[in-house]
Image (cartoon, rainbow, N blue to C red; front, side):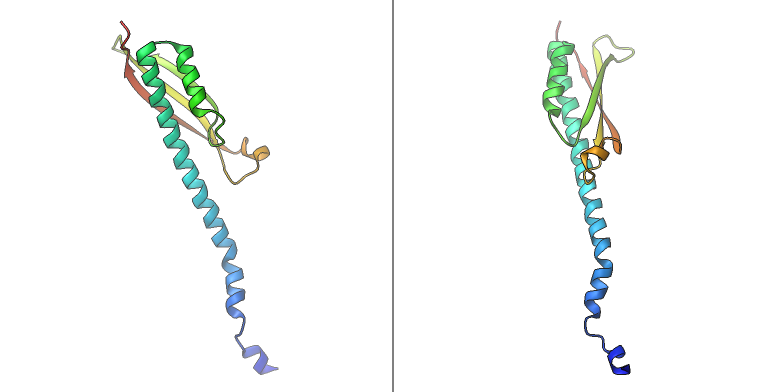
Amino acid sequence: MRKLLKEERGSLSIEFLGILPLYFFLFLLLWQVVASGYAVISLKAVASDAAQVYAVSEDYYETKEVIDQSIGGSSLLRNHNFVIQNVSGSADLFEIKITASHPLVFLPDSIANRASISIDSKATGKVLVP
């Protein structure tokens, strides 16, 4: 009996099973970090595109259409809104601020909308239309 207790065959498998939840948690955390980084970069690109369109057209609705198309049906950016305002002290400079919510990617959709992170991006430009 004592010999059976001192035998270490199979102990590595039990140690691996003990640490497996940690590996799973680290994978989910890494997945969320990558998705959040992609969401931030995407929102910055959308703000830049919107600023370019507004600089050329100075049309609110055309800018809104570009923002809606750029974000589209993205699962990483939801419930977006934007504001265009003039920069104080300058007649032809403007700033676009876009805000969107970024849900946690490993949660089901029913919960993800309630557990989301708000991210925003700004772009400044100069109106080119005379």
